[in-house]
Image (cartoon, rainbow, N blue to C red; front, side, top):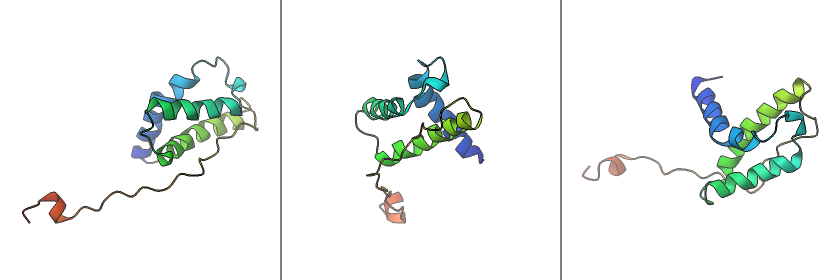
Length: 104
């Protein structure tokens, strides 16, 4: 894993995933309804300013954590993180010399 992905995964886990799921003293108690509650809580936490694309990217981190638990028998195979279906890619504006230096 690239260092930047590792940092993103670590930061996402610390900032969003752990604070929500710390209420579970046993990961085997996490069910699909808890995943849905997490997604709703995550959207509310950002006052609706986070895009579904960002939520999906963060959910991929959660999915990987849960898959690890499934592999080792700690989490039920039925627990799945599904992507949000209306997540549209939001492209950033291209940088041009005019944007960087308006006098160019």
